[in-house]
Image (cartoon, rainbow, N blue to C red; front, side, top):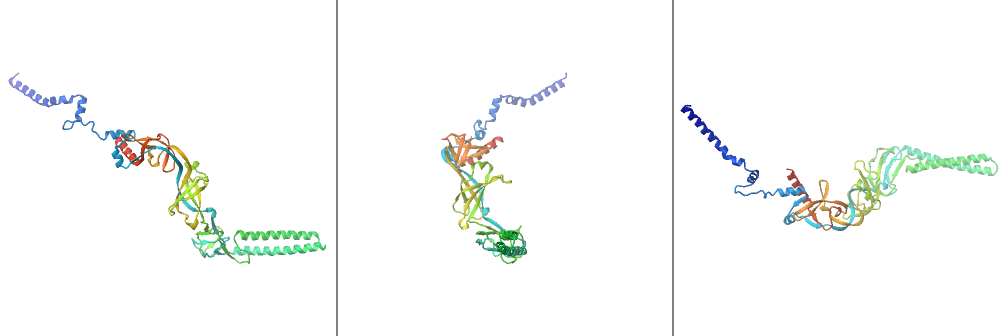
Amino acid sequence: MTKKQKWLIALMCAIAAVLAAPMLWRAPAAIAPEGDAAHATHADSHGHDDRHAQPGAAPAQAGEDGAIAMSAAQIKANGIAVDTSGPALIRERLHLPAQVLANAERTVALAAPAQGIVQSVPVSVGSAVRKGQALAVIHSPAAAQWRADHAVARQRLALARTTREREYTLWAQRISARQDLDAADAALREAEIAAAAARQRLGALGIEAGGVSSTVTLRAPLDGVVVDKPAVAGQSADDSKPLLTIADLSQVWVEAALPADSLAQVGSGMPARVSVAAQPQPLDGEVSFVGPVLGAATRMATARIVLPNPGRRLRPGMLATVDLLGPAANAAVTVASDAIQTVHEHKVVFVRTAAGFRAQDVTTGRSDGKRTEILGGLAAGTAYASGGSFLLKADLGKGEAEHED
């Protein structure tokens, strides 16, 4: 080996040593124990360990089991009221949407008795009318014919009576045969039937007898108010198209929408309280009718309350609410109704704990809107969030969302 080759080998070794030095310098850190490496990741620039200073760790864990950490100062600042569960007298109440309607049993739609022409309509929508008052005048040739038939039947009846009296006199004097009297009796009965039929037809159609006039006057069958009047002078009329609708508004119906799952709680005679925006005070009544059939679209039944309407203050079409009141009964464990929240399709009450609150699953029973009976999941004397529980529900949902992230 020449001297030049030796110098070349020495130079290569020196270069290799220089390149290997940084790798050897970092090796101790790379092979450090796992625990020391984990500790090093939590050391800050001053060498302090912050592994136990993560403010988000505890709330996330609390969200998993329904616990919410909250100090007494935070509870006060958030306006969360705390109460104690206990017994109470509950009168179950169903709060239902409703509407004021005209009493259908006291509402009459009037149509022309026969085809004709409307001559005049002296009333308008909203007019108060009395029984027997003229509402419309109609010209009808058919009515003239029926009056003529009635007049003819009366004339034939008078003639039949005279004939029968004469035949009876002749028979009593042994001048005529018995069969002539029998024929007169039969003719009299037929004339009586024909006259009665003609009279009944006029009466059923509301047509006044007398003469052969074609003028027909429609009269109010009851005291009430004109609630609909499609008729106008000059239009054609027949018995298929109502000309006016009269409603007796001295009494109205209030019909409430009753859910199917509440049908077992409601029956005729149940006390009811009706609230209408136009009335300063609620009106007391009772359920008079519960519909046997559910609505095809709403899947709800109808609960009807009949109310007197002095001064016609309640008007058909007004919206209302109905509170159906069940019998009062003692409940062993109750909470404020506002305290109950729904979390993941479970009803919960936020129970007070040393650290804050915890969502407790409960089974509810009767309710009067202010207090709700607790059938299971909560003992009497338990402190719970009676007001502002919706804030706790929001915090719980927020904690669960952060945990999922």
